[in-house]
Length: 249
Ligand SMILES: Cc1cc2nc3c(=O)[nH]c(=O)nc-3n(C[C@H](O)[C@H](O)[C@H](O)COP(=O)(O)OP(=O)(O)OC[C@H]3O[C@@H](n4cnc5c(N)ncnc54)[C@H](O)[C@@H]3O)c2cc1C
Image (cartoon, rainbow, N blue to C red; front, side, top):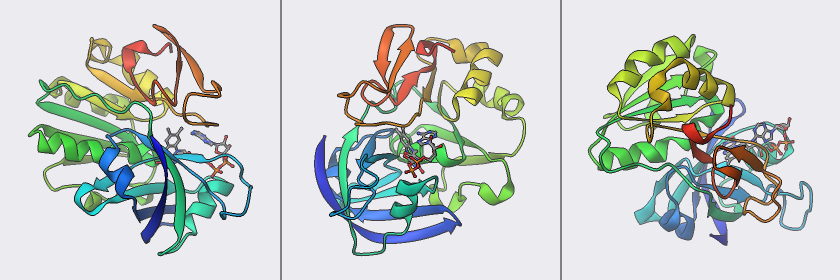
């Protein structure tokens, strides 16, 4: 975990309000694991507003070239500033941070479930799983056809399904096929899957992302504390990925 300065190499608008920002960040690219994030200073170097850094997953990485991408959905001031930054501009980063996805070597069939803005936590995991010769299926939950995660950003080997309604019903047959599932969805969707399918409650089967606004991102301020079945945990340090069985719904 370290501070670094990254240089933006491309900023692609995927659709209004959603940007894929590629940056040269060699130290981050070497160290980051799937599901980890960095805290980005979202203002001019001499400015102080917004004061707090904002958390973003490392969406993908090209370790040999020292490149990382962020998938930024504009929500408020910080993400709007970040989305406006152009090629050649510098970003002040702190990371990688957090505990990412855990992928046991025994997994052969990996199911990923993602939801709109939270899709950013999954593509790096796809790369690692394919390198380990796992079969990977990705279900992407989208409220409308305009908001789907672009299939062109995924390797061809991934089986990619877009679900625009009733994910809970659709997920059943894929969960039967999978021997592990990684869910980057809202807490509500994760809870729905957890209670509907007994398989989701199996030991070492399901993991999910818990997101909430973070202040320090590094386990110091304790403001992102959540109650789990094994006691108080911090979203930024012990997560943001948790075993689904650990979460108190
Ligand atoms: C570990 C982690 C990883 C993240 N990765 C990504 C990513 O890869 N791409 C991405 O686009 N976003 C990601 N986010 C969300 C992103 O950090 C927030 O959208 C951003 O901090 C908002 O800052 P802002 O200044 O734009 O908006 P603000 O003005 O701070 O907030 C705008 C609105 O968004 C709400 N909000 C802020 N953060 C969150 C959150 N985490 N969850 C739900 N609502 C929130 C606020 O309560 C407010 O209503 C991540 C969040 C976390 C905790």
